[in-house]
Length: 181
Length: 393
Image 1 (cartoon, chains in turn green, cyan):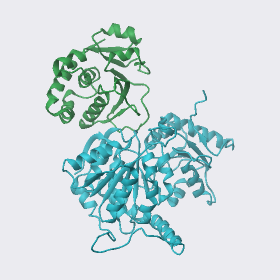
Image 2 (cartoon, one colour):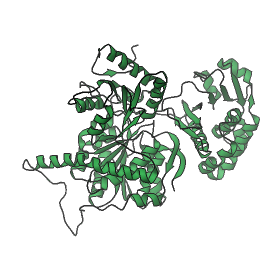
Image 3 (cartoon, chains in turn red, brown):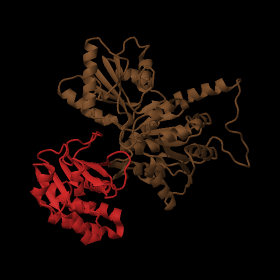
Image 4 (cartoon, chains in turn red, green):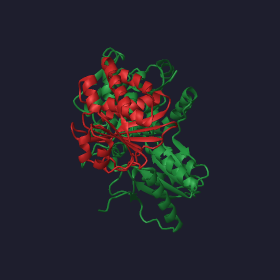
């Protein structure tokens, strides 16, 4: 089983990311959960969302406290919340940033693998918006292999309709451009 | 053929309601059941379901609305939770007394105050005595299945009672997971059109929900009680039929590794599978533990409970609600009462956990089971019930 925690701000699409990833995994024949941090949400306030993916039925409905993967949609959160809390030492931290993995390691104190990708830049270029949630899915897939890129096509089509291709392009670029330490 | 799907459980719940070809929904949206109402409203406005979706100004009107629709012969549905179901409270015993087979999905949520929008079972426990059939789902699949089963049970001529399906708020309502969605043909075969016993119609006047004085109120109450008790037979039949059609088994009390267990844990709702993990972990350490899960809360499954606990030395009952100043959590109280007359019965412990959205982990169940075992060994049960996990600082 792989457990993932996403950090974003209300409105940046962390909950959409976990939904798309869970649906992709399920359509691949796996078992998956996607859920928000329960409770009220406000635009701009820090939020977290979660995925579990496994090849067998998932029983737990408890929260995720020791994720294998943390994905950060907004690097300004690093100064606000402890994004690496509970992250397994052998796990991976993936950040939407123009900084290097070394700079992120210093900022977070995380000693495991770090993946960096300028998801915001990619999203701006490919879609004309700074919302990088689907872009970051590409980076996460490269770093984890949790699903295939092909598996994302159907949920992205379903969700985004005529702008699905732009999202797929941004996702593919992040898949190719993420640098992993 | 059923189709394997990945979607939010609330969306799947709304799809299941649509498969039942309801005629009327009346909903006042409230967290965490809102997505059920939203998606059902989309299905109707997109023309995929020929139904009337009434946007009412309160939950009291939502319940009154579907009762009126049901009395006129419509298949009717609502969804709510917490303050919403409490606002309906006045109408709930009327729906059961009028034998109106409406179905309500409850996104279970703690009740105010203090204000809290997260999960526990405080809302449904306050509606326990309203004469409704009450089902508890432990995962998304059971939400789909129970909503469909609910209409069939409610409308059966030997039942004719309203049914609520309890869906743990957020934990289930906001979870994206894998489920099998039956197709329309399968459900059309399982759920025939609603044939009411009598309907309101201007050309054929009847009176419904009339005044009953002291000459008849007792008799009506007795008949309502008997109807609810008798409903279990039909529920069991319908569950058997469901198993035959879809291969998924439903029982009033589901058991997990419980047959030879000395220590039994008893849960309701979405805690069930998390608790299975605790049972597996303790079994691996050689502890003789097993799990019981209530799926049918009303009518209360007395016979099944007695049978399930036979031979066990300890029964630890988990409540997700509290009866302030009372003898325990609602489930704990009823289980103790149900087993009181048995010549031999397990020592019963009662823990209240997961209030107002407090997370419940497999480790919590392990701690509770170990604590029950050690208290029983010392023959020293400290309290009638324990509110678990209270922060002391």
